[in-house]
Length: 268
Image (cartoon, rainbow, N blue to C red):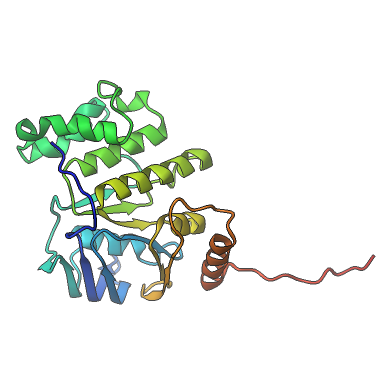
């Protein structure tokens, strides 16, 4: 059975201290992707990372996932060093990356089978399909599902491993506006039910404010954390509420997209 997760989360605390990461191009030039990044994420917290394209948000997320070893600094999960990928850190990409030759049930079960845990946890596949609203689509194949439904399947595939941290790399970026807003509500519902720590990369300012406990703003490469904004509004959040719009405006200003009102050049 899927273990119930109620009350405050007790696992899933991420600590990042002085993290640096560089990449070397084929011509030998060095790109500094992350420079002295410090961030603490509490267990069960929802964090969004936002900043200019190419500033290092996804690099930081993949470093937390253990996919990018860092050059300096420290990353820990619940006090233990992160040295590589592990099941307690699930990762969801912008594209669902489902296997087209497997039905949805088998796609979700793939990680369990790879870890030789499927026989013991087979029933949980159906439970997580139900959690994301796909309980009647287990025998369907990816091409038979909409983009939003495929992304739900990708979420279920990550969650079935019961990670203490779920890392989301622009998972809604390819969806249309209405599907995207529905999926945002689904992610919040799952987060509230599971109490899983979530860290999500996004380029959407509204999305960052709508989802997060805190919005982490990153500056252009080499990425550092420029500002952290706490979002105090209770959920569900009204996108038209003055507090929401104020935070949205603050973020746009930090990102240099605030704009300025100008006097008209003519008079009537």
